[in-house]
Image 1: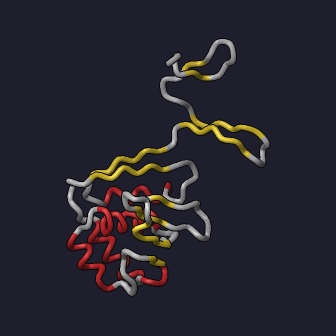
Image 2: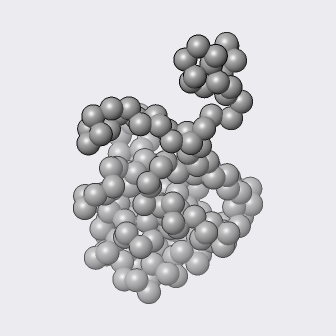
Length: 157
């Protein structure tokens, strides 16, 4: 599963091993993380009870779906509830980058039964067009200041 850039055209795509899109979903903004978890439950884990519950979609769930229009909020809520029951034998690793739309939605993961590991940004160095230079935030665990430059190093790997 790979979210597209976060703008009005955000999409969540699920790919096959051959890198062909299996499905493209336009998530809701308010429940973007749960929409992604629902896609994982249906298309990756292929949970039988969740698939049966999704039978009421206006479109097939494995095609293009605009979750605002194709599934009512009440039906989405029922699907989220079913997805939360997927057992602990599955584990999902969620990587949340700086300023991600799902950063404020991570608390919902506590409602899910499957294993989960959340990885968040601890350090970021990137070029800013607005500042016309490189900006850094956070720190690298284990890095120590370089005596000559004053910048952090990894200890000379």
